[in-house]
Length: 384
Length: 174
Ligand SMILES: [Zn+2]
Image 1: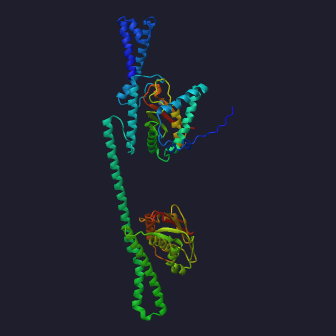
Image 2: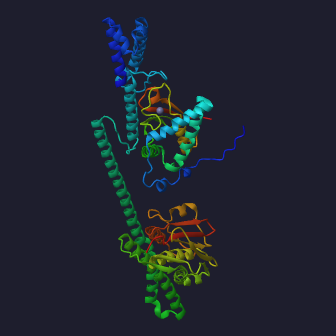
């Protein structure tokens, strides 16, 4: 009970005592009345009616208190709206605390480890230590899961590496060896035209092998964190032009037209070699998967921050959604032959993705079977 | 009587307090807040009667709750995050200490308590729950967060002799 209520009970007791001892005047004074205004009868009636109410409140409250004592928190306090029940006020507070604590434990059980208990001093300290321990354990688990993921990725990378060496590197070499064999054995019987034909084939095989080796090397250097990043201001149009030179011959052979529409003043701050590698791979894919007489269009525009978005679009064979969904994944096999049997391992796109993402950009593909593909990437959203 | 309201409260109407009160700061005495609230109640009750006045307070609280949710809370959080955020902000603004007693997300039914409530903690027993404004405030917050209407009722209050304000919060199924 509150001190105010204790004081009232004390006054009532003293009045009763005065009455028993026959001190009417004192009793009246305690009530702030003159003796003539004081009626014993009236007072006793009021006293008894208050006592009755107190007893009824006590029994009403006892049901509630018993339930709490037995651990039943589902119980509701006696429904006595707008009538203060002195007996249970404090216990309602306890009930409320226990309900909140129950809710907090349920939350913690559901994984909400941000809860902090503030109830019963020592209890809170112990309880919060327990939550802290759970939180640390969860952090540790998250860390282990992350390491597991990294291990899986490493393993997938290793598999990819070996599969490239076993299949993709082997086949152009086989062709190359066959051609050298032919020359070693029959050179004398060959016309100059025959020799030139073989030389062109050998050059194509060697180019393929060289590009693949270049990608493999860059990829492994990137995995080891050995690729330097020297961002400089680059005029995009010039660099795109430079990059197309590398595929010009292959495109000419297939009669593919290359166009670009890029504002002359568009600049980007990034590493020259990295941007070139990305463009080289996207362009060489576009040539591989575009049939004779097709077109390749390169566009670029300023994007969020200081970055630019570059798009390489081709009128090629496109791809279905299943293949498009696997494009940038190291653990999925996406290699397929170009329209003229050009070899492709899918490694180039993985390299592009790693390069782009390592430098704060993103890459995506839009494609429809038979209707060509568009590859979009952003780069340069970094301060030099 | 024709009514042409000229004013429509928005959060920005609170002004730039930092700029306006470089020395006194953002805080004031709780007594001042209650002085405003209870003199306003006094006048409104004299003009419109107690029932209408309760409605006014609930409606004003509702508007405040909506604006508070939009401007001081992160409505993109899930329920756990949102209640934590709400409790944090209610404490930050000195409105009260919020605690959840029961939460049934499926039925959208909650029991919340607010201790050390700005409106009523420490008020003498009068047999009446005071926190109409808080009822509206909670309903407004819940509406801004869930886009649903809620029935909020204060079950316990300092005014009814309890030591913490308890609210039942239930969705209104239309
Ligand atoms: Zn209240």
